[in-house]
Length: 440
Image 1 (spheres, rainbow, N blue to C red):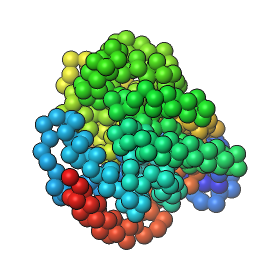
Image 2 (image 1 turned 30 degrees about the horizontal axis):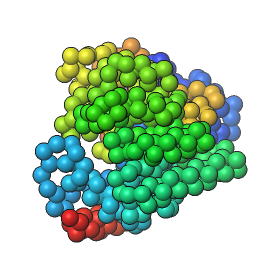
Image 3 (image 1 turned 180 degrees about the horizontal axis):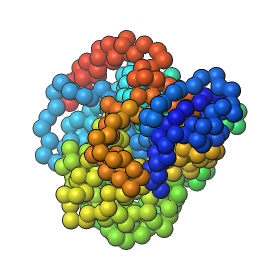
């Protein structure tokens, strides 16, 4: 049993904050929450917070851990004039260059960086066409070794040929089957599975039909890029006389576990379809700005908007700032409190996949918790929580992280030495860049 003593408890949405609270954690569940209740329990460990803040875990709802070793990349990359050229000149060369070792170090670095930023769960979308079979278990190993929670999938696409389509489907089916088997044996699993797909402009009707069958049989959701760039929208309109969302709906690919990344070029009809299927739209503001693809329209009209990074780290305290600032710079300005809901919705995705309670510090909820050493120079109450979270809190304030009831990061230290991992990752990154240079 783990006890967090004398904390200031923050819940994001609906927003509240309570002082002088003890939190009792039994195995992976929050057993009890209240003032001065620790005396009633016998603990294996007590963390004395002395009035520091704790919150539910932060969730990155769309990420690409395979991009972790692209930071400061020195590979020979042709200049890109548009989004498709960015994909072809950089990202599709990078993913083709990934082998098992590169993916492992990409995954382990991605997981460590996530935890240090207070992100307790990452919904990852993997692509490694040179290493498909076993790729999801390689990433799962990284999540388990660090203690990070996640939902994993492999990106199915037509762009690498028929053989790779079949390998990708096989990897997805096998991984989902293994996860189902583990769920029967244990209720404390860290990793779940979704059905991955790149974007509809690289997917034929035949492939979408196969994906639809897998979604139906597995009772999972699709994790796919939608309308990230105008070219995706135009492809569907020009070739199928419908929007990308309408095309996905045609193949019964929208449900309450669907994770739709980006949505920059959605119509209001698309939003009605997304809401009608109770699906999730994941906003990735830093990535959209970096790629120059535009700004997501109507973010306040989507019932289930969440936040992701699209491979630019896993720092959700950074991402929520960009989401707010970019919105404030747009004509579709929405209230600051909406961004707390977006942050909270990542936990709703977890609830639907893991069939457990996430996202609040309350009895019966999963013990994914972040502790902060945050000093405020101004009054901090529940009424201005959104203002403090977006203008004050930073990953530098993350002091300790608990995931699934386990203390994985304490006083800004992991339970194991990470220096050797970073040194080896640097060598592996150079190997990745060299492999990219050999591709035409």
